[in-house]
Image (cartoon, rainbow, N blue to C red; front, side, top):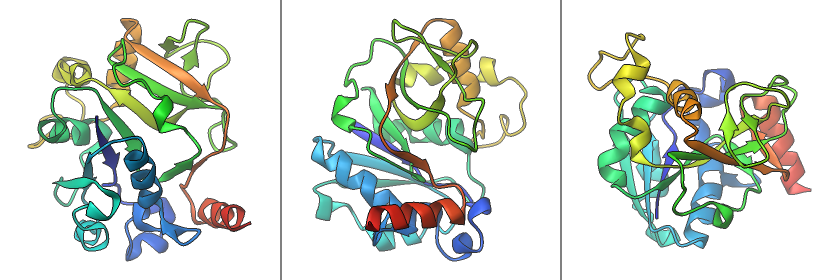
Amino acid sequence: MKALIFAAGLGERMRPLTDATPKPLLKVAGKPLIVWHLDKLAAIGVREVVINTSWLADQFPASLGDGRRWGLSLHYSFEGPQPLETGGGMWRALDLLGDAPFIAVNGDIWSTVDYAGLPQAPQAEAHLVLVDNPDHNPRGDFVLDADGRVHSEGEQRLTFAGVGVYRGALLADWRTVIGAAPGAESTPPRFKLAPLLRAAMGRGAVTGQHHRGRWTDVGTPERLAQLDAALRR
């Protein structure tokens, strides 16, 4: 199984820390955020990881190399000076990811999600990990029903954790779903993944699981400092 780590964001909310360092390379407990993911992916037998890059892209191969220290083969999908958003980034990386289902992880999160517990052959087009709503996202994102299906509307909403398993089929009809949204006609195209997920939910093609352990979206310097202090304790 292969994996994709989203690492192309500009990290604007993390400035000034991200003026000189991409957010996934910021350290918590002495280890870059992205390395926590590489360690976990290698531990479950993943051997190839695609990392999409844009902002300060050269720092990723300089810091991580070719991945051999983790027993991995790292491939870098450079998106140019402007990130392609999650949908465009995943679409651009598909040639490197191949036809089989793959894990995708946001490079700026930290969690105790057990990657070994993710389905290697999901029945749906996407399988999402959801968490209890944090203070910065009190209304949540999606609804997980008793049968393990994820819906875009409903009560008892949960927050998308930035961890999932995907099939390339999710992006097969992306132009129809995205329409004339800004960036869709760019080369390469730039678009968000969320509209594709919501469209797939409408088809009953998204499953999920509820992670009740630790999870942090490292979106601000304050949350980075809090996570660092907690892990060092």
